[in-house]
Amino acid sequence: MTQNTVSLGSYLASRLRQIGLGHYFAVPGDYNLVLLDQFLAEPGLAYVGCCNELNAGYAADGYARAKGVAAAVVTYSVGSLSIINAIAGASAEDLPVILIAGGPGTTAKAENRHLHHTQGGVDYDYCREIFGRLVAESVVIHSLDDAPSLIDHALTTALARKQPVCIEVPCDLAGLPVPAPQAFDFSREIPADPGALESAIAAAAAILDGAKRPVLVAGPKLRRAGAIEAFRKLAEALNAPVAVMPDAKGFFPEAHPLAIGHYWGPVSSPGCAEVVESADACLFAGALFTDYTTVGYTLPLEHHRILDAKPGLVTLPGSTHTGVDLAAFLEALAGRVRSEEDGPETRRPRKAAPPEVVPGAVLTTRAMMGQVQALLGPETVVVAETGDSWFNGLKLDLPEGAGFEIQMTYGSIGWSVGATLGLAIGHGPGRRVVALIGDGSFQLTAQEVSTMIRQETRPIIFLINNQGYTIEIQIHDGPYNNIQDWDYAGLMAVFSRGGGKGWGKRVGTEGELAEAIVFAKSHDGPCLIECLIDRDDCSEELRTWGTRVAAFNGRRPSSIPEGSAFSSL
Image 1 (cartoon, rainbow, N blue to C red):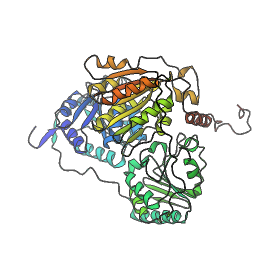
Image 2: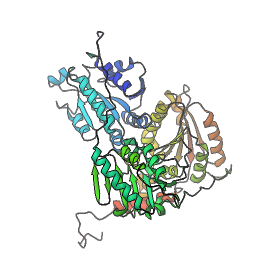
Image 3: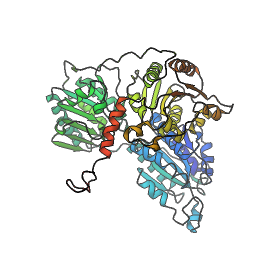
Image 4: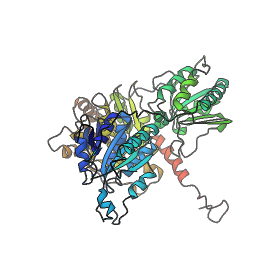
């Protein structure tokens, strides 16, 4: 290399540092080894080796939640297709994960060679085509001439659209010289329409000012839009009740006098649904309505009362406004609305104190969550895995400053193990990740606990051992929901093998759990507390939700008309 050139791999690594990354998650393979050599030489960019590609993708998902962007490095085809489920989840959750795949050499491609890690033919483009359906940009570098511009374009797209991108780097180009990176602004935003913004503000302000019982509801896409603080400003300006959707928990301070809890139809916080559903104007900010968040599309909300503000689109009763920046809309609206002088009529009900610990009592979910509640502090980040952990986690009162992470739109079981790793690394030692994970979910991705030990992270995992897939049992039970029991706590010794600080404990009583938590709080390493819970001990909210989602899934196929011979089946 000369003074004015760097290797292609070094160029990409330096750009990752420039956009704010301090780590990347990787699984080595022969097509990405030269690229990894270049990454290892980049100051301030740390390698985190994962057990498999799927887990690396989940870890990148968690890291992006903590840092705003993440990167994962895999090998061609067998690696990139293994990580694809995690990348699809990052897309659904609006997380800019940079997927970097080491690819076959350009010479081998030009010669139409049959290569390993392929489908056996001479078609080398299928990975890019597959990812093209899932990511904001999928590029394959073919020459050194256009490599820098393709890299910069892909990274800019990921940050602007808050979506994953895929960059494939041929193995024979990764170590060759390209011009050194020049100054570049990756923070460019997609331009909005100022006229559309003003018309949306005026129309929304008129509706809210004319309402007698306005309510605000925070949705998950507030994070994508960078609009969480703007939403809070609007709430305080309007002085109206504020609810959050389940996948937006933590986006509005739960101790705030305007907060009334999470809105999830019949499984909402006590008293919350009544306030939201009786409002004469309800502004949903950053909402995403799915069969999960609407409890099988059973929410009794009338369109003429809904103001739906999403990134790039504001839909109001009687008008639609496109090209509207959500953060700018909410912030400007805060200066235009009339404050509700008397404040909300209904405040969030005060929750009962956690139950007293009865040392010899058999452990129940309620008792376990009471002790988890007492563990939380401003520095805590709670991770709730798909399943009953959703419902139990949503009942927690988050102290000011605490975080809450959930993957509700994509709902991939097993996500939380890798995400816990990524969150712990992304947030660093100043924050403690507390994960609620069911035994069924844990079995999908358990290996990554070993990486938590290797990376010297300090999460506390509450492993709920209730012998199966509880969420599936409530939707549709069958023998496929049963799993092999493991010595989950014992895995910490297996993964540490005497050289790490992983610690595990199995508990079956309230007293045993209390003792385990005391130790875990002071332990300088990952902790796994295996909580033995009866199979039938699940939240009533899960039962209600599962019944309604099952009813939605079990509707008559649209191809079978009403009154046909099959309509009653």
